[in-house]
Length: 170
Image 1 (tube, one colour):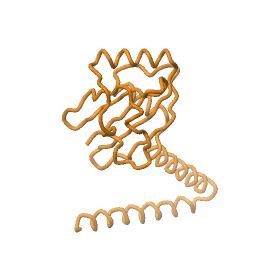
Image 2 (cartoon, helix red, strand yellow):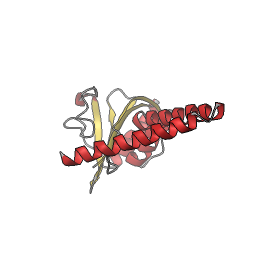
Image 3 (cartoon, helix red, strand yellow):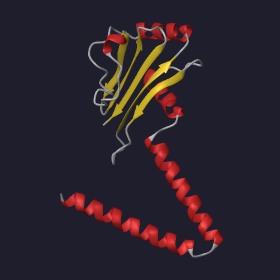
Image 4 (spheres, one colour):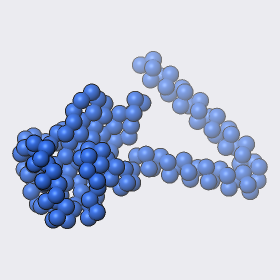
């Protein structure tokens, strides 16, 4: 409880200092007002991107998890990521729609990596209630790496078009 109170006081202190500096800059006239508006807009954009990453983030996660280049036909249909905590730990998952040929290529890769029929809900996104991928939709899955503080998993769905990726670091 004491740590929470200290953290709260630090956040309040930083907010007061930022408001005070903002007020001083605002008083500089038109240039100050434009500066504050631009800085505020940049801050809001950075917070938005941190909470809702762009598709490029999930494409990089795909490469990290599958150790395979992102398919040219790939389109991210559904995505979810948590905001990193103080230690940099986060979780992300995505559903990616691919062409039939890319799907068959990924299926071949899974078979070469000892993939097996999925059993159980995907571990990475199991705590996210809004994640509606049912395990019955899976054809093959592989838990590629689970060592140290990382878990990487991916699989293909039975519809011959969708790929699931999940990454968790704790």
